[in-house]
Amino acid sequence: MVAAEWSRLGGGETAELAFSADGGILGRTIMTDLPKMLSDAPPRLRGAFEAAARPVRLSQGQLVLAPGQACEGMAFAMHGTLRVYLVGMDGREITLYRVREGESCVLSAACILGNRRFPASAEIESDLSGLLVPAPAFREWVGQEPFWREYVFGLLGERLASVLAQFESTAFDPVEARIARWLLDTAHGDPLIASITQQALANELGSAREVVNRVLNRWRATGWVSLDRGVIQLLDPVRLRNIAAR
Amino acid sequence: MVAAEWSRLGGGETAELAFSADGGILGRTIMTDLPKMLSDAPPRLRGAFEAAARPVRLSQGQLVLAPGQACEGMAFAMHGTLRVYLVGMDGREITLYRVREGESCVLSAACILGNRRFPASAEIESDLSGLLVPAPAFREWVGQEPFWREYVFGLLGERLASVLAQFESTAFDPVEARIARWLLDTAHGDPLIASITQQALANELGSAREVVNRVLNRWRATGWVSLDRGVIQLLDPVRLRNIAAR
DNA sequence: GGTGGAAACGTGACTGAGTCACAGACGGCC
DNA sequence: GGCCGTCTGTGACTCAGTCACGTTTCCACC
Image (cartoon, rainbow over all chains, first blue to last red; front, side, top):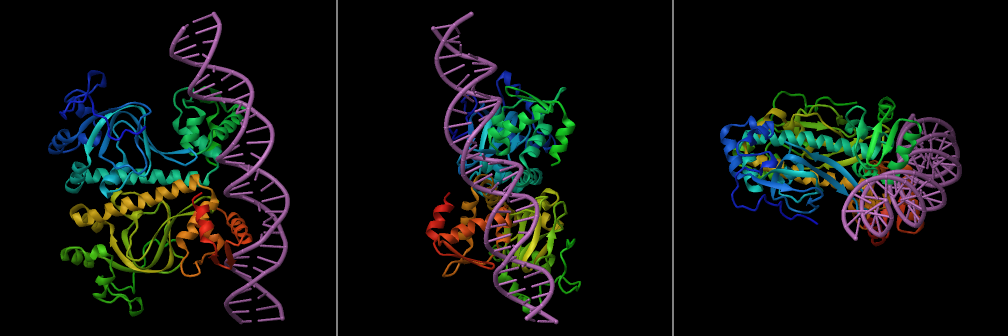
């Protein structure tokens, strides 16, 4: 089910920047938690931001935007993450990028500024609280404030490049290499562990669960990984790096 | 071989907007040939454009930008076309989009404004003459002129969407559907004809020549197309449209 | 503690798509 | 005509995705 409008926190009509206590954001605490980009902003812009931004809170699994929907506002994530992805008609998926704490969504920006509909899907990956700036305000700011322009252009350049890299990799690289790369990029801790189901990993890469399963089992047989429900442990990162290099 | 810098017309140092006669662009003729977008511009901006833009001329086959190169300027095509594409390490290619008469290149804009390197390849597909606005001037204009901002944002929204559509199609759709779609979108005249080699068609779609060959021969056997060296004639567009729909 | 159902994983058989190697076939040109 | 480069055709093979089904693990609830 699609949340046609980002749900408002609490339901009050005021747009003050206050989350409930467990959200960790109260009054001016916000300044420290906001993206670096905002903390560098002239006070005037911070004021405008506070006046226009609406707190939003969304829960895991919620589908925030579907292909063809209009973008009502520019969202800035403060806690939690959002996943932006493509879906094929057979249900296969490819993750384009994530919006994490302190970040915002390029495609939203491009939609709002270019007056177009959202060309992908977006879902809440872990409970998210953030701030939503209505499209008209955002458009005006980007038009008038060099600060916001720089922010948007930086965002565009960065994400555009990463989406194209993903495109290239999906189109040309063998699945083994892509799986290895994803695991090496994502796993952390000691021992190296990636907490993800095989289905979800397939959805990252635009592949199928069975394919991922077979690759991982091959690697388990040679002792390069160990597997558990929703957990992949990298036992031999060096070999995996070899495979990742193609 | 990479043309590290867009070659200058004639070699003169003046930046006046004059091509040699066969180029068809002389003095103020340019105004009528420039993108609609410029003809709508306030005279002030047209003046600045004329002062800053350098005529460039490039010939077919030339590789204009390679992955990782810096974008020196924003190019506007007046005659001829430029193809922007991804290349895999095995040599397979996927066309991202074309820059045609009156158009300009999104990725260049994104690179210049986001201060990044070009994330793809660009080659001249048919002899091209156009105008090159140096990056600093372009950056300044977009910063200060609402007119240019609108132009850039429109461009971004439009091309971004089409590149994502291409991504989705490459990742999820069967080759048959993609070949059919490409042919239907491209073929023109009566009878419907697409003039392209099978290798080039494979390069459009990120597939392999042999694959394209087999599909086309299957269709020839059923009488839906007829084939010649570098020519594909669509005999049964209705059936092809069925296949294109997947 | 048992149990039923959902989610996650495992596997074989099949089809579609890309790769490799090589063989014509056509077109331009000396 | 004869030569060379480009374009096309084809078989045998491998890799990746699909389909169908079975098994294991976890967890909520009685």
